[in-house]
Image (tube, rainbow, N blue to C red):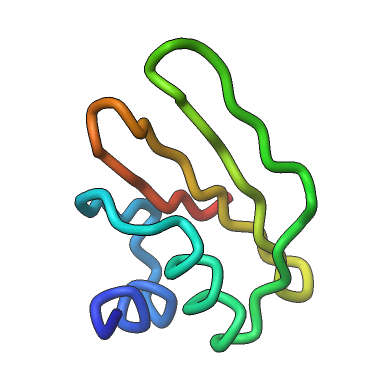
Amino acid sequence: MNKLKEYLETDIKQYKFKMMPISDVIEAMSKEGWEYQDDYESKGWQVNFWITFEKGSKKIIFRGSLWYGQFTLDKE
């Protein structure tokens, strides 16, 4: 999760990574002070999902596909 921490400290808009337990990402984001918004959404047979995190006025969307195993964090 060191790369996640590095991403959070940069101006890079998107961070792509391979599938891992969603709970691990939520836990890592929480440790960095990001609040998990209880708006977990998913759809389709590919199990696409998106979760919103907020810290102050900043927002990051955690998106991915459990079928294809590709995850991204997008700064808004």
